[in-house]
Length: 376
Ligand SMILES: Cc1cc2nc3c(=O)[nH]c(=O)nc-3n(C[C@H](O)[C@H](O)[C@H](O)COP(=O)(O)OP(=O)(O)OC[C@H]3O[C@@H](n4cnc5c(N)ncnc54)[C@H](O)[C@@H]3O)c2cc1C
Image 1: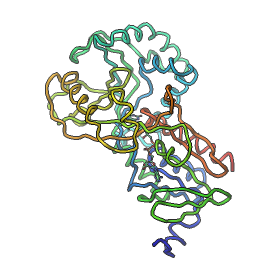
Image 2: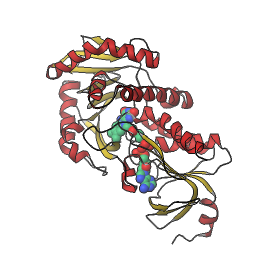
Image 3: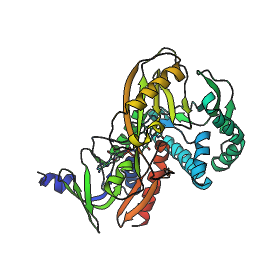
Image 4: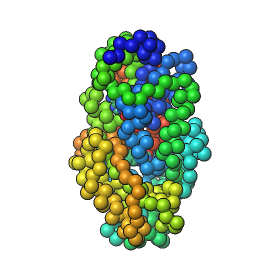
């Protein structure tokens, strides 16, 4: 079926870098490689026409930290890792904005708000107690003054207080993806969808087998397959599905900007006079450890309840609903640090991007390209 002269001798010939995964990491990795080596043939493939995981399905939070999550993470990880990840997210977000332009991404720095109700009052008190210390560390790490501030007044129902982050912003996920995708094409990177990698044989030249029997040969293979990497090789990566709902358009929104609740397990923002709400994975983590882009009705029902009761204070119609898949580490601590490494000679990977992977993606792509080029 695939022994086609034109495909073998032209479309898929003489590939220097074959990147698997057309998400934000794969595309930016390809761009960095092509910019470093303009004559190289750089090809990105994906099992879907475009990305089918997280990059076109996320909530568009340009975020790097919230206080409750920092406190939670410090229970499971070292301060170096926790603050190191925050720094990577912050710098990655700045890179994304500088390279692709705020206007193209519809980036708006409206800030973010973590709200607290009576049921998580302890989190609020812990947050307030830790604010100054966290702000000092973030000032030293990022050079930002008073990242977090406490405000007792918030108009949302049942809310007893809120912690604000003045430096976070929101972007349009579709526009970000389209901008990065077009940028890649414009500098001569070949993007082919509908090709799913099954296995490979390593060596000086790598031979790749696909699910529909195509054979592709490349000098270097770069896996940017995030959650799905563990289907291709042994890796400390689990899929973490996330559900998202989007309200109807309303004349008057109850709030604007990024919002979070319950250590970031619930997150919402305004878009186009609607509220986009995602999360509540903690209600059914087992079922959400899945590679399938399915609906979890328990979680979606809870998101609808939260949208009505906690955000609008009245019933609203839900017009869109979808799921996406990000990645986490296995085990109790569910590691959040991405894995960027050489897998074997001429084969590299960048994966395990979790819920703040948009911000991280530029940094991860940089690190991956440095790893790949330094081993030449
Ligand atoms: C619901 C949801 C909301 C989120 N919200 C935010 C947010 O607001 N802010 C934020 O910073 N982050 C958010 N994230 C996380 C962020 O979207 C991801 O961390 C990031 O997009 C990961 O990018 P990636 O390129 O590594 O992975 P992906 O976008 O998943 O790309 C991996 C690609 O690999 C392809 N692939 C896999 N296996 C194969 C194979 N064998 N052959 C060919 N192709 C293959 C897949 O089809 C996919 O396109 C969210 C994620 C989800 C799921």
